[in-house]
Amino acid sequence: MCRPTYFDVTYSINPWMDPSVPTSADTGLAQWKRLHDAYVALGHDVALIEPVPGLPDMVFSANGATVVDGRVLVARFRHRQRVDESAAYLDWFRADGWAEVHQAEYVNEGEGDFLLVGGQLLAGSGFRSDPRAHDEAREFFGLPVLGLTLVDPRFYHLDTALSVLGPDEIMYYPEAFDEAGRRVLAERFPDAILADEAAAATFGLNALSDGRHVLLPERAVPLLGPQLRERGYVPQGIDLTELLKAGGNTKCCTLELRR
Ligand code: ARG
Image 1 (cartoon, rainbow, N blue to C red):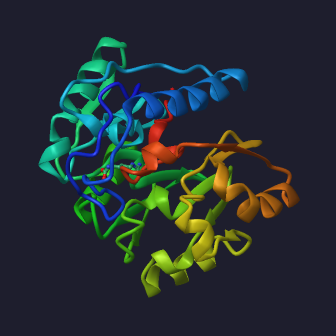
Image 2 (spheres, rainbow, N blue to C red):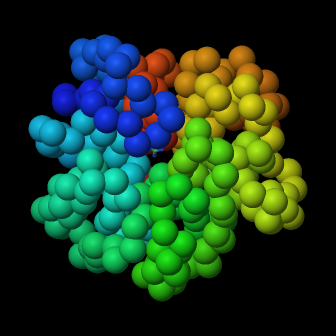
């Protein structure tokens, strides 16, 4: 995770970001801290990367890399405002002693667009990640990659439209994907939880599951909670409304380190 010390909305690279709406770094920090503390209370180890001044979106650490089996593919960002984050992640992983650290050649925004489920990487494109990055990830991780095209600008990263809940279970908002993507998801995950527009619009799919607890935006709990509980998950609401002003939430703030 990355503390939102320099959090702000000074530019707009997604439809949620409006620089004329005031933000508070203090509120952002207090909300972020509750997410951090919730992970710790659930017994998870949380590593921190030092925030860099001038990189207000760095709090969204999910975008920094994709990490599977100790192999680290460091992101290459689409927008110039975030390009310098890559160097910070490269340095962090090297300093932390990870052996296989590779700077991606093609634009990919880490776990914003790559999600691991059932031994397969689901890979979003359409707004941020370059489809060529899907092949790069396939080669680098030696995993099958399933490309999915996003079509609704509000859900510009895969992790805003789809959430991995368990070893082979997901929830998603079908309308965020093109026809082919919807078809492929319906075939591959016939038992998925389907979210409606209202749930997606609360950023409810930007959730983080540890296989039992599902941390998600507080406002999404009444909408997705019943279906999650039915399947044995424990939904836990987190208020990250300040960070939502930048178009991010629970999952965006969390990069999973799979050793
Ligand atoms: N303002 C950031 C951007 O547009 C938000 C990133 C959200 N991260 C995510 N994993 N969806 O890049």
